[in-house]
Length: 242
Image 1: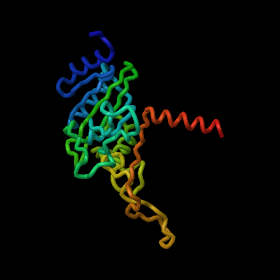
Image 2: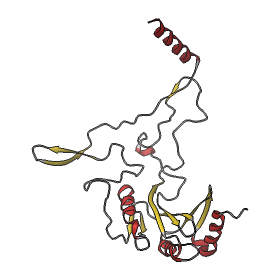
Image 3: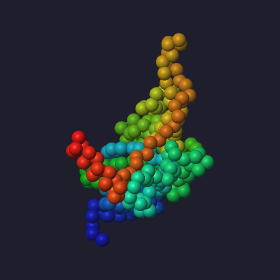
Image 4: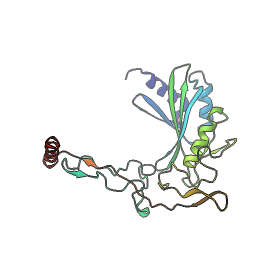
């Protein structure tokens, strides 16, 4: 195996942290998965130790693995002629709640993903921490290690409902104060839970249950066949004659 930067860093991480990190390398990018209980200690070491020096946290985001690996799109088993919706109608927003995606390919649903940069060594590293409890997803806050992560954690809390334990001011940052739910969760209704309007009688903005019907548009795939090509040719002839 060639001594690429990714290989060198992966070996260094394995030697330093052992079984604490589960390391994988794809497309020359390293992802290290670890338990929430080890996050602060590992993050501090990655920031401070001379062999790593990941001084910059460039991004943090939440991930919802509900339905991960499942797809409704037809691919290799479709016809090459005629019209087709190209879907089986089982994706988010088009499934019966009893038959909703379960995320069987992932044992846990929510994760917090951190992207780190070492300017000194010109290295990048991705950390992934799964939340132990899907009903109350909690991971430690990294604000004590990289203070600039403050708003990133607020965003992940707002959109995914992940609670960052130890955050100094964990509150919504993108949605309204009265917003119900977390809009990036895959089982969040596409039409939302409430709608907002101004009530002229009360002279204020009020919240009401959603009044519109849920409807998900699916693009239609048009495939070439003899009938369509003939229709196109006839339309062109009609246009030229007129």
